[in-house]
Image (tube, rainbow, N blue to C red; front, side, top):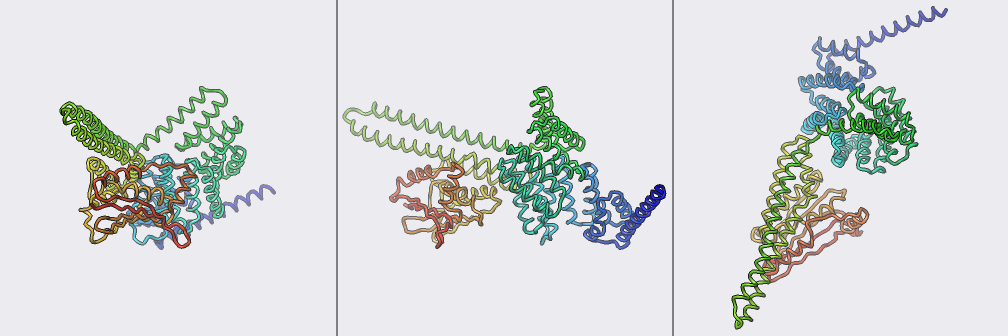
Length: 638
């Protein structure tokens, strides 16, 4: 009886299998005969079978034989995704590149952009930063240049930005990564794309975790998990599981972390994605290690390391070796602890060498720093000469004049000494101004932003901003030898400064200059770079924390025959809100210096009939809500 039942069961399976194969063949024949041009329609027909490797290989073969490019493209693209999910990265890239060739041959730009992003993602999983960045950047450039982009292209732009953010994470440029993720999530919110939102919130959480903001990291991980639960994304649940557990470990909540990661382990094993499986085992081992479950920790960390080594997952190779080093240090087996520590550092060094794209930036920084130091030394020498001149002249006048000319000598000496002291003060002010204008924070930010364009391979923007930076630095150095400059030249210099600061704000700051038509800016003289500290204050204390569209406007008008008025107006958060933020964060940010600027203005108007004035006005609406700040600078014309 049992034999009959077993025979019947085998017969049923063979009939069922035959009917399935026949159905698949019919589906492929239907696609080829009708030359279905839409990849979306192909996907709807083969959706349940798109992870079936033999079916996909058959589709590619039949499509090749019948010159059915869309079928061949779909087959290679799906095979690339299949091998990627199995962490067979070389095979994945091979299939994706074949799909890329066909997309270009058929001039299918939408598919080309998607495949470029997919190839970049595979390289990123291997920590091949340069190749990953090249492919994502190419995808982004092609997508941005498409006029009236549809949802697929907007999605691809967001994916590229998200992936570039992940590359910055691997480069340990966490603030740059966060900036890319925030740009990416704007598109996902507009599309209400739940998977995209899940991915972006997870990545934002990762950036905050690396920046040490545990609360923000957990908040974003839970937002990601919520979206993954809504779409029932198993991979998403796994990622959020070990990510939340990692944060809990950092917060020393080891038991909670162990429970969290343990709940997704079986799910990770079933999914067979080695990348996420190795991450899960590594986090599980780390939680056990902190709970002194050393044997279990050892087994899971070694499993993570073996998977990562087999499938060339650099990140986990480094982390698992570091954790094993920690484990053996706990066991007081320092020889093995050092062995794993060295392996971790050696592996990390491999990828860091590939990531060393900051070399050009380092050279530029060293060069400009050397120039700045030379200029400061030169000013110091002039200051010293002025000091020696004071002493020399005083001695000469005492010797030269007789007793009968004593009163005249004293009067003359006093007058001369005042002049030399004033010259010394001017030189000292120049030296202080130059030091302030060589603000290392501003220089670092500007060069780091230029580095960003170099990393993105955006040569045009990198060259443009590098030229602006060098021109601005030249103007600073030239200004150190000038007593005054035209208001027109000052406005041009401020535009340069604003364009460099604006890189940090993704060009969000709108800058306008409004001038009284009766004024000739070339004839109005002011101290060079005197407006810069007021603009810097507007940006960093007013606009940087503002969420609305950022604006700075300079109004220049002649209020009488003796005065010109310069108003610098921003729509930032206002001085009261700025003061509260600084008090909470204990911020003590250095600018070029308002006090130094006032000293320079005092020296500038010393020989004029009228004095200058500077005062601030808080802009408010009827309800006393802040609308920004206005700086009113009144300068004498004579």
